[in-house]
Length: 72
Image 1: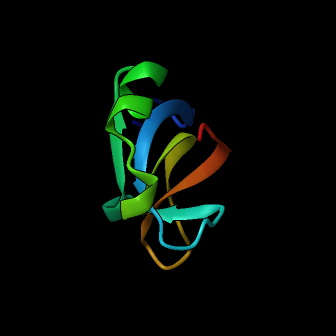
Image 2: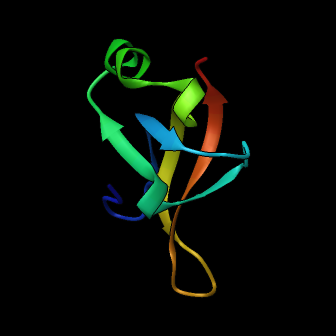
Image 3: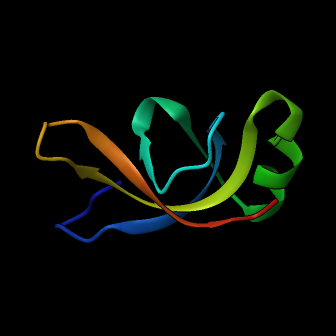
């Protein structure tokens, strides 16, 4: 969540058939911890645990998260 213009890093499960660095908010499911992200991930179903930063609003007014690193 964007608080006062500061982008936060959060753990998430990301639906990503192709691993990208810019992730639409609709493909990102935020979770409470790294462990929760790893448990909820399913790489064979393209759901990957990740640390993401965001959300940010793109120049096209889309909400995006940015990949910090993949966890699996």
